[in-house]
Length: 238
Image (tube, rainbow, N blue to C red; front, side, top):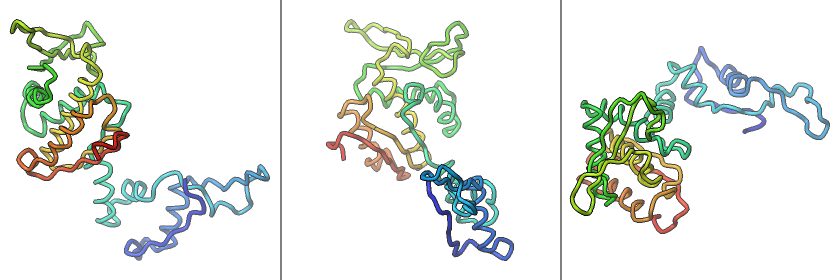
């Protein structure tokens, strides 16, 4: 939160939107015109509406409500809201299914084919998964997918060379996390986009972390120069 809202707007102000108008947008639409609270006196300061607390970014408000005012502002807003590929912590284990449809759409093929791409990359991490498959399954709401009507399975090979199939939700958290991240990585590589991962090392072995980073550094796998931005507690991968 930012108090005492006051700004200057070089390059943004126009005849229709002079600096006073832009200041009003910052004061009112970024804060709701919330008056400044005097914590010592437990009262609202008289005339403090001009010193409201900022609750929303100016870029968000201008990009959402005044996109036609400035092309550079609209482009910056689009980058942060649409072009960045984000992986937050709270949706990690369901990330595979939530991104499969988008990957299939971008590459113009079926969800089965998208799963094949994910599985091929997973084999390089030596997780034992040979193939991923999905099929409608209205009988269960706990199938490793955020959609209760979809059942995802993972095929392995046992010590005798036989095929063993597991429900995707029976895989370890690390495998499920990695599968979802791999799907998002494939999206970033295909688009040449920017992938942002919060706590890359969460539930992932350090070896797997390094392999993911190498994908972005490999010029053959990353010809469109996609970028990876991440936070981590493991300083060895920095």
